[in-house]
Image 1 (cartoon, one colour):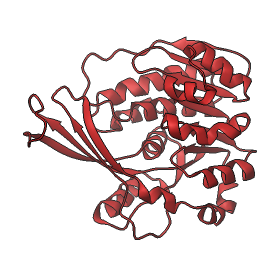
Image 2 (tube, rainbow, N blue to C red; image 1 turned 45 degrees about the vertical axis):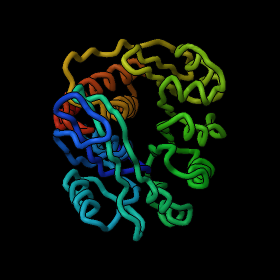
Image 3 (cartoon, one colour; image 1 turned 90 degrees about the horizontal axis):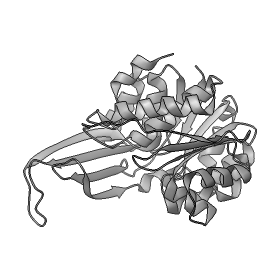
Image 4 (cartoon, rainbow, N blue to C red; image 1 turned 60 degrees about the horizontal axis):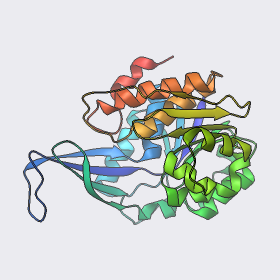
Length: 294
């Protein structure tokens, strides 16, 4: 168990699932669920459920859903820090077909830019107390630069988020303790099309201490600075309820095991278990993760 600081996005997710074949340009009968999501919020929740003490720096609006999210995070025992803002909470609208596969989505992430360098700077003394800092590439480049330039002595964990945004980490690869990305994001960072194994090796050569590269339902490749490179076969789930939150679950498991000085292979295997569990949840996190408390 450890004290972990997580910095990044939190969303209110509106997820619609069509009852039958989805017909475009008309209203379709189905179900609409509302979840508190966002990759970093999901990571923070998972780590808290695994028994870690978490502090979460994020941006949450003062609207109704934002107030409910704050209450939810407080219920989980997560210390949440956020700037004052008039912007609405970040929202993510997703439409799934009857097979629960995404057809379209719209995201309003404007509020994340309320996390500014002066805001992070105002929390410097608190940040210094953590050994592990987890952040995503939704943060703007100035904030990411400030964190790496001022807290490089910490174990900094990075979630890629997307091929375009992962480039925000490119200057700081030799300062990253753990980088988790998918094959497309890794190829963007390396600016070359390679296999997962070669991508892991290339990122390690550029100074990243631990690397995890996923590829949808294919094997998860990993490596560390001791050049221990290998893969874990993705746990197959024949029936799933949602694919949302699986990447965050994988990252959460890896972080939790590395904190306990377990091997990168053990950490990825544990993350794989959590991702499979999350596939069977309606929302982006699973309450059953608490069963895996160490």
